[in-house]
Image 1: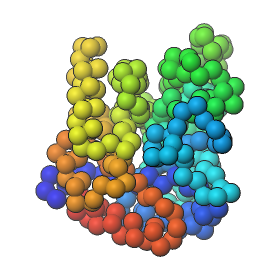
Image 2: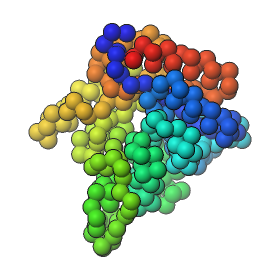
Image 3: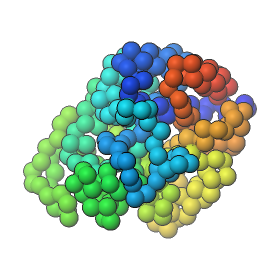
Image 4: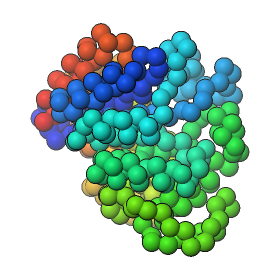
Amino acid sequence: MGRNAGMKIGVFATFMSPIATPTMIRDFGKRAEDIGLDSIWMGEHVVLFDKNTFGYPGSKDGRIPVPEGGGMLDVTATFGFLAAETSRLRFGTGVALVPQRNPIYTAKEICTLDWLTDGRIDFGIGVGWNKEEVEACGYRWEDRGARCDEFLEVMRRLWTEPVVDFSGKWVKFETCRLDPKPIQKPHVPIIVGGYADAALRRAVRFGAGWYGFNRDPAGTREMLARLDDAFAKVGRKRADDFEIIITPPASMPMDAMQEYADLGVHRLVVNLGSQRPERVDQRMAEIEDLVTKAA
């Protein structure tokens, strides 16, 4: 694949019951590591609703494709389970819905995962699209962007400072300690997802990278130009180690992936799609071939 060499390949595999049994997840993690995958990424929704104000942007009908009678497994617990079965794979949240999470619990969960995995966690974050879910978790929908930024600042300080005083709109505490600190320094990488101008400003302020989901090469090129503009507005230039992570459209053929390498994408996180065993076997064979070509 020429210039594709060195691009890391991961898989987006949001595990769903009843198909994703402990045996299935354990075997999948070992298989992913054996074929040389860089990482496994999982999406997050804690609850789903029969009726939503806004549709899921990743499907044509606006609904999350969950098996009948099933649901999405929790990211933190699943990554802890997978980490115990692997030694090299990284694990990324794609994305953690920060403005509907308790920031102190989230900081604790993520740095504990980083501690237990010896630094194999990427904290992909976003503000979310599901109004009903945000409100069910006890927060307002309208101010989720500002709340996300405050929560990220709280987490970043708890991860890096021995003792923290914080006085914000949503979070207030004094002489607070959170340990253990993350293994990765200065802290667990924050990978910002989203396409609005506010998301790009968030990536510049907090991010070690930017994550684009379901982006084709043309859409990726457009977003990178906007991201560079966001950096320029604060007098900075996007650094070479600012990681660009993309999940291509599921329908995109594997032989088209070279276009992402030409754009400077660091990591492709290919969508696994169906978790039925025969479909997993087929898809993983395609991904393994991509890993070989990218090596």
